[in-house]
Length: 287
Image 1 (cartoon, rainbow, N blue to C red):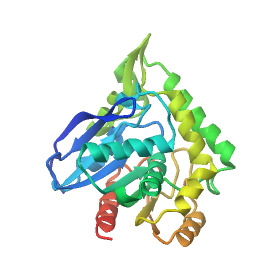
Image 2: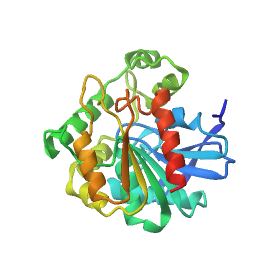
Image 3: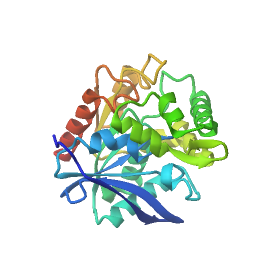
């Protein structure tokens, strides 16, 4: 594991403007493209980016409608995100990319692999990319839950940056950086950068038939990392073991493992979760 990995922020041209991306280990010869979740930014991948071997480059965008890419206009939805991923591959001269997606980012990764078959070599799905499952009441309930959480996050105004850092309980340097990066100035203080319309459009795909159809058509090697718990206070995981096993049985290229003692968030930030992601990347790279 590297002691320190350098990173830099840049933009790449996409339809309608420029997409903000972060590179860890810009000079490395091997590359993964890491895609964040529905209300997140590239900084969610800092735990991974700062711990991978120095010969592995991690490219992580702020998806359209999030972070420093919040100003990009629509269309939104998984198909547009997939096209943006291809634009990233083009900008970096990558013919076939290994994609890593967390939560909604897993859906983006799957659709990119299906709709742009020649551009992906394999996928690591970090507690994401599978359609609505047993743990959710139904598709509409899932959509409502995602949108309610997103609206609440985007509407809260914090008087200071420190107030938000304390509200989310950020203590380690990466968590503080992630919290600080989330914010943009607004009347009365600071709010989380993001476009609710983009999030609403994306949520429709997460819960709709299109996600099941895309996963069923997947033919790239893919490894799903399942967290046994959801985000607190939710004890049950986003995906049940039975449903994960069912999809692995339907999709020949999909395998799955559970990462013990993680939830939907800590699978991205805990030592065990990040180590599992690094191992999964190595596994898919050699598939």
